[in-house]
Every structure is written in C-alpha cells, then in structure tokens.
Image (cartoon, rainbow, N blue to C red):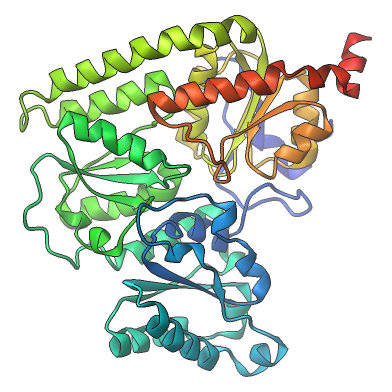
Length: 450
C-alpha cells in the first residue's frame, strides 16, 4: 500500500540490523490514528484510584470514557466507577465554567466524602481559559482534602502527554503521608492497573517472596497509600510509558531507584521476580531461595498445561498492536512459547529504545510500526496473512471485518493475562480465537485457498 509521506519513516521491516524508526511525534493529519488524546491518557493512569472523586471539566462527550471501558477493579471502595462531568454547554463556553465546577466540587465532596478529587481539564477548558488550578486550590482549603487539577487538554499532544499530566497529579500526593513502620524490603508497583484483578495476582507473588507492597500506581489504588509511597525502597515500573515520569521524579526527590519489568509471559514474569529478589538479597538472605522455589513451582505447573495448545498453534502467525511497546516485547516472547510467530508489531507510545529492542527480538521481515492507523493495519495483516490480531477495542473491528481471530490485550479486557496464571488464560484465549472453525467460513480464507 502507499503509506502517507509523513509516516513512511514510522514503518520499517526488520532486517536484524537495527534500522531506525521515527517515533514520539504527533499523529499525522488525516492518518486517523489509533491513539487516544491527552485527556484519555491521564484517565488511563488515574482512574483506578478507587477512593478518589474523578470529575471531567468539559462537554459531556468527554465523560464517555468511563470505568466500564477500563475494567480496573477494586477490593474496596468503587467511587472510581462513577463518572462525573460539569457538562459544559454553549452558555458556559461563552461566560466560563469556573462557577459550575466549584459548585459541583462543593456538592460531590459533601455527598461522597472522597479521600481526594481529580479535576480533568479538557480541550474546551483550555481554549476558554478556566483557571482550574485556582478552583482546585480554593476547594482544597475549603474541604480539607487534596483537590488536584489534571492539565489534560486533549490538543496539547498525544496520549503520552496525558501520562505526564497524570504523573504530575500523583506527585502532588506522594510525600504527604507518614512512612513509619515501612519494611526495608518494600516496593511500589507502578504501571499496573488491576485489569481483571491482575494486581492481586502480582501482589500474591510478592507476598510469598516476603516483600511489602506500599502502593500500586494505580490499580486498586488508595489515596493514603499513595501519600506514603516515598517510603518504599524500590519502584518497580511495568508500563514504562505511563509511569516512567513519576519514577524519575521519585528518584530525584527521594532517592528511590527504579527498575523496568513486565508481568506478561513466562520469561518476563520470572525475570521480574528475580530482578527484585536480587535487589533485596542483602536485606533478606532468604529471598533468592524463596523466589526460585516460587518460580520453579509455577513453571512446572504451566508447562504441562501449555503443551496441548502448542501442538495446535505451532506455525501460526500473529500481529500485535498495543499501547506501549514494552508490552509488545513480552507478547512476542509469550507467543513463541505457544509456537507462534509475530510478523507485524507496533505501538501507540513506544520510544526509540523500545523499538530497538523490538527490532532485536523480531524475526527478519517483521513489519514494525509506530502510531499506525486502520488502513495501514488492515494492509499489513492481510499482506502477512496472520491468524491472530492482538490489540485493544479499536483494533477488534479491523480483525473481525478481515476474518481474523482477535485477542484483547488492552484496558477493556475482563480476563487476567498477567503473571504465570495469566499465561494460561492467554494461551486459552489465543487457542480458542485461532482454532475456531468460523474462520474457515469467511471470505479471506476463501481467497487464500484459491
């Protein structure tokens, strides 16, 4: 296909020699990018904080991005499941929406007694110039809880800029609580959003290793936990795109080091646990042995269950298009464990280092793409004749319209795919999607047979 001239450097075919790829730029006009906006990126990060009030300051349409298309679950309060909007109308645009926002905060804080409130500024608010920060400061003093502005006007950049806005908001909470009684073997989990309860799976591994988890940023999150996050001895960053900014801030301000990990797939899950155990081996002499025992047991249980899936999936081809490129690395490895090859891989927010790693891991001829669009993706998966498309809710229609099996590995899913237990769920879903006889009845398969 003819790729837009301005996008040609964002698509490469791996040749094992580290070809350069352009990334971290704004979406090309007319490309109909799969990316979300700045506001959406901020909500992805902050929404799982379950005992906070989340208010969208803008038109009602922005509030359509709710918990129900996010899937972050809570073990306690569920205030994050309610979506509130100031619902700015024409009159508000002309005369300003500050009074409306103030009245809304006054009413909702009294009604729900949240531990904090986040106010998301949208495109319209940035245009008309409402002073969201001043309103939040006023309500913080009045209500005696943190009321935090999230500067997430959609036109300011990309989804990644929304991550930065969210990290800036979280930084307002970190360091404001007591750190007494925190273990010398303690961590913060970053970039884990408790989709379908994945945070609980990961926390259980750390509990068996003897590690205290201070807070998760932000899956099943709590405001009081975030306030004392600066007492942790290590930050463990999974989704580097969403949480690297706050990890770097905490390193500079509090001296807390961080490591990057992934909880997807056998190799990366085991490597994550080993990295953390190695960091704490001086403080806890038995942590290495406990971790090895944990990993050995989990992998032995896994191998027997995966064998049947491997036999059916061997040689099948997959396309991956997800939010962060770091996740794509884990997915390539996980698919290899199932005997599958990845022939198309891309992300919305990957950086140069992520794409270097992807090229080193990908097989020759693999299409690697940054910030793709539906036309490109459809062309790539047809060219490579893939059997499975792994993506999010926006990629699902592309796959089904082309007669290709689909696996949801984004924020909308309701099945946990992280951890060793998640690998089994992943194998089951991939197997059911790829092997389903329905794909023998769709036009793409007819054409291929011809």
